[in-house]
Length: 460
Image (cartoon, rainbow, N blue to C red; front, side, top):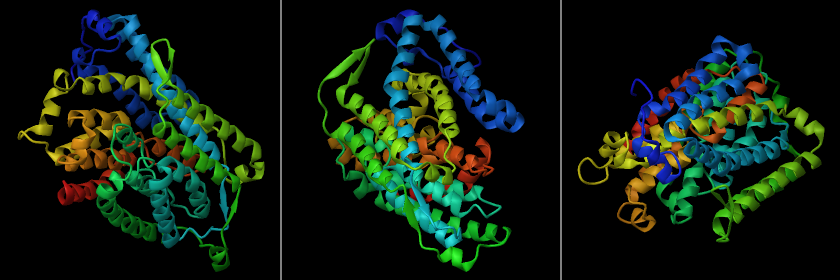
């Protein structure tokens, strides 16, 4: 990155009405980097301060971007960008997470308290399968409380949550547009609904064929260092579902998301320069209504048994507000393509005159690990031509590489995909000592690095 924030002509911003990605250096990403480093190190160096003031830290880094950008590109351009990010991107993101967090927290699968490596691996496999049908976030919220409760007797639990993030929070979402936001973006751009299933099934299966046995081996090793195991009677206790009505609400939430993409109204509501489609407004209202209904019908005892609290949701809402704001310049630079500061990097995508599928896989994936994977997918989708028919035909390998990178490599960091940080926060609420930002990356690089190299070699 450059040493300081560059100066650019505000007139460029005024012409586009928003941040001019072609006139911005990568140094505008320094506030985003600062926020990431804060998430990584402040909880370790000053845990009490972080627990109380993480929202202020997020706001401070946001201000470190917004104020200089207003002075450089003009207040109007920055305020329009900020308004668009919050209304069009952040609010739908938080509402979806809030609804799934609330509904998922109202389902309790009681009785399965064994917490053995075989049972844990089975939950991860089940969650990965569900993720392709109801989405990674929904599958994670449905099963994470059960998994944590089943392993509450164990001293070493962080690795279970880490592998849960790998398999359920990310890899399992590769088979349908409902599985992960990037694939839903592709669906809205014209990619057939079943295209991911036919082109990403084998890469996904290869990932799980590495990750699940690796988890089982690691879990067996840690089990030897845990305390007394539960009795055989407890392990054999038959599972039962409490708060079962929330499963229907969960299905309705997934249906609301799907309906908003399948049936566009062609009408919108303009709010200070941001066009809100009627179907998006209806989806947001439906999700909020479903969350409220879940709170009303779910017995308090079920949520108490799940250790359900609002703090994880509050933490995610405050931190991701800062992430969405501070990442905006980097997304703008990427969208500028060959006219932007990332042009030398993006030129590697077609270095030989034809799309380099491996480069698309790695570049989409590595950027998705640190930026929002949905806009990253969209950027590379457009860089590959943006024509869904061509990308499903002669360029199918390129689209598969973009899709696999965006979905799989979101698992490399806590912020790579929406469920990751939420799963971490819920685990910590269950008193699981999770690794730091870079501690988690040590796990992900050790397990997923070789896995993705294998996928790249085998398919791209």
